[in-house]
Length: 192
Image (cartoon, rainbow, N blue to C red; front, top):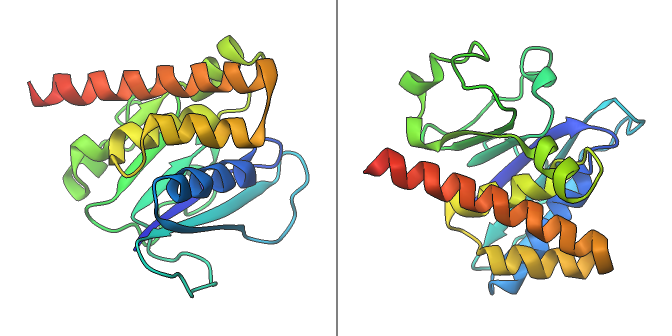
């Protein structure tokens, strides 16, 4: 079972991001579930959502305490909430920022976790560019697809079309695709 925890703030589409990830996984032939952590979901409040992906039925319903991947939509949460709690040593960390882990003060993470799985993506900038709104959830899904290989960018695009239509869907697909290609290129460069 692969478990993803998504951290962000209300208004960033945290719950929608988890739902779209589960739809994309389902479209890839997997079982998936997505659910939020209930609490204050007012705009700007910290929000957590979870997604589980497996090739067999998923019976668990509790919050994910030991994620295989973290998607952090709001980097201001890095030092105010323990977003890294329980992350497995071979886990993925994808942060919405244009800064490096070193610039964020997280340089020691390259000793603690696999450096090639520590990624930053300017997801808000991509969302503004392609959708016109600062909603980083969909570009981060594209980045996750590239990093993990667990879902394809085609499945992400189909999940977007399942949730949105018209220009909004196409803009989100463009943002996710650009994030996917950026991460793929960075990973290939790192292995070259």
